[in-house]
Image 1 (tube, rainbow, N blue to C red):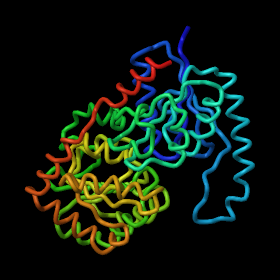
Image 2: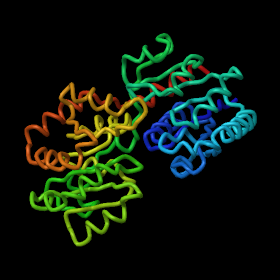
Image 3: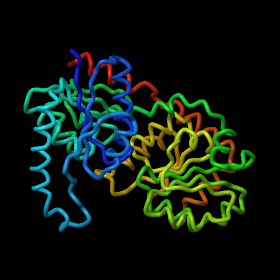
Length: 362
């Protein structure tokens, strides 16, 4: 009989893309396997998962809103509703195992599975574990981590350090720099800076770039600028008539953006870090300071200590970031050194390791 697995979680690309990579690896190992995703209604996974060819069921759930306490009034009702939805989904689908990839929608699904004796697996991408995963880890069958030293969060006997699953398109990309730049309508003869604030955009990074548009032009530098939805219109206005800027709210072919870039400016979510290691890129990280337990700073500092990346504080982005990016783009020696060091940290088979372990355990 075909094995059945639910993959739960989402909220950002950092949770969704690894989840899809794991699903693809499971399918590759066992083509008969049935996979169902569970995510939060209204979030990015409801669009990205079906695009990848998988079925997803939406839950009426929201996370705790740290910035506006009044928005948390309906939270207990949403939690109760989501647990009822989860019960229905799990009882109908009857999975052999459930994999949680992070994001608040993973909690009710894994909790219900654990209460009913179903094997559960956690993928913790960050070097500082989230509270939800720490709670669930006590009863999980296995815990896959992106980095070592996670015994302070999880039972050591359950941990397997796999690294973080990276999209196959990035791992297997063979596009040349020239082809990639032509894809974006840019000049292969000029140095190019890729600016990405993650799938949802980054206000401080966008404002830092917007304030220094003439400086990039003056130094003969091009921009591939992914803004996220809130800043997209403003960026389009700034880029109007400028041949050295390509901008959009989202980049669908991230492998092309990585191939085109000489320097990358990025947030330091675990998946961004993993992808940039595989892409062997010279990076300036601007950690998002309000990430849970400040894990983005922990992620970025881990690479900076190995001379594998530069780091700019979010609060200093507007004054420091553009100048640092321009200097790095013009310094071939420093760029090459960063590329060599980050390449040593690349993991390209995390999804296969996870798929193998899950299938052996269920």
